Length: 290
Length: 268
Image 1 (cartoon, chains in turn orange, purple):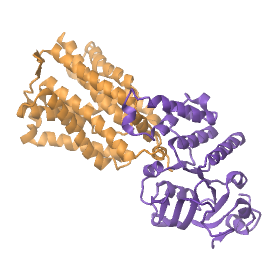
Image 2 (cartoon, one colour; image 1 turned 180 degrees about the vertical axis):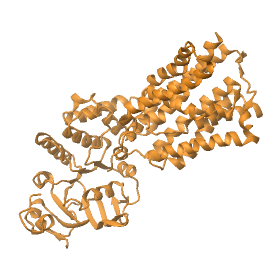
Image 3 (tube, one colour; image 1 turned 60 degrees about the vertical axis):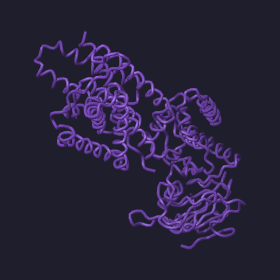
Image 4 (cartoon, rainbow over the protein chains, first blue to last red; image 1 turned 90 degrees about the horizontal axis):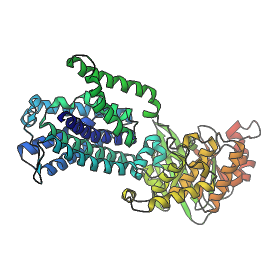
């Protein structure tokens, strides 16, 4: 039963993370490869605040989201001025910088040793060390996060982002300021990544840099591409398939565990490549000149 | 080549109220001077056609007016406000609308969503996040009524990409109207449009005129442009070389020189 709870919590974390990426990539059309870096910032913020300063649960998740958002504002301020392809390269470079900091800033992050002992909260007399209780807490937070995301998806803000992604010049002539809208999209998507990171820290009671590798970025990208970029329900469903069903299905394949892990990553990458190839015009539209 | 004003001073409007004023505007891109010392006044409610051979700077002038290129020299003012250094979105918010030569439509959206996106741009962003605000239904109502005017209401739920070239033009014009443009910059509104649709575009432009909108249109077809323009400005090599009524411009010998080096009758 604990394994099912485990899958449930993983689904909650990844669906928040993927929907954040869905906003910036699926709706705004920004190929942001720093999304997992902001997820890492959220996870480490919670780890440091909860372990070092014994800050409470809600304060930690709010601080983690805001910290990730703040970071996004810094990245956005620098790289959103770049054209979309260069923005992707800039965000990838930024992701590499965050990875290097997590490994090398040992006095703060303990490097590759990571930060252990992140205490799960105890709220209203409920002990969230019990996995079933933690799943309930994660589910409630996820429900709130997804509800707010659904509102954003159906808002004028999302339509403006879609308009900018489809014809930047036309959207500008309808009063949409490219930098302002994209910075907001980047900020909001990072709030979700930070929140997912905070939940991740509390769930594992431990964070280390290996949890925020490029493979993780590939998984998030695959979830959004499989679920159809911009689609709220599609991304929820693809998170379920890729985070819950696929690993479960692979358990029944008669192969060594050491092979299954890389096989799963290989399948994710293959799926991503095929879907990008099929939908390349839609995923990466060419902006016309004025 | 010198400038010719067929009636009055070149670049001046006959209207009482000035809407757009360009004062000695020049624009250089990569060291190449595309627009040279352009001075032009467009009055409120005026309909101005811009013609000129390929490469004369017509679209660049529109880019300069809508803010996609910033003038290297000179100044632009709209309703008396200096807009020289404003971004395209800020100029749009002040009432400068643009219809592109190659339609700038949000192709993955439906026709209705295209309209809704335009109209929503008039409202403060936070209001549209509030689910109980009745702003959505009023916006949809306005969008449908504008689509009805250009007989596109039956296509409202179709993807914009499925529209014909002429329908895309109509949608783009009516979308700018939905956003509240007071000055419409129409870049070859009939390019690639069937004769039947051309008539519809012409009717829409007439309707915009009757609404008191100011229009500046780039057009190659002088027969078409004289149907609705009261004034024509001729550009050549980045300069305003002629400015007058359509009949005066047609009669001018300078127009032949610009297009054909004076060898034969102009067929613009």
